[in-house]
Image (spheres, helix red, strand yellow):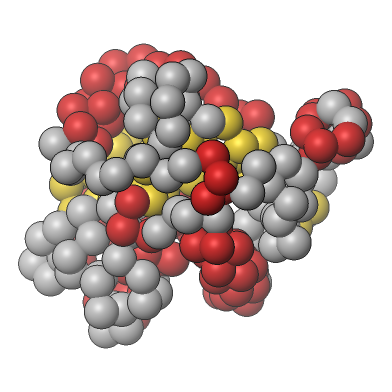
Length: 242
């Protein structure tokens, strides 16, 4: 699918003028200037439009939203036109590291526009949830939190031995469903139980759903996010450079 078909033309294609993720959508709050930013990561084979509904459902008035395309064309033969954050085995780690490198470049660009990681929430679905967890738990930044929807804990034993300085501090909400046929609930739950004694900052919710973002989890997500929002001073539109 072409950039024109997904995002329109001209300034809409790259509204923030990013070099790291040129195809993105950035949305300011409907009223006022943003105090916080949510970066949204779609699943394998998807695109940045997949999580647009999150903004309407959560109704977080002080958030700006940044929707990104993953950096790689999807390698699934049955998916055409979509993107992915990493490929299939044995190339998981290689793709994750490459995606995180681009996200580090993004963080530098966003900080110059006034968005700091401590006011940034990472929200990902499926493969995008893996990326959010990896970036926040292994990296050197203190994020506001991570919402991991129908995701996966990649290499849990290796993860707990290679946490970043905020890996045990950054709040994480994980939601998953027993009817999930893509990332099986039992396997994910076992991985969660492996890291739980060390990562007490992870909250796990079982939702009666399959591999999806279910309507019943939006109130859970909103309540969890709101409980972590001591509002900070607004970022001005001048500071955003747009």
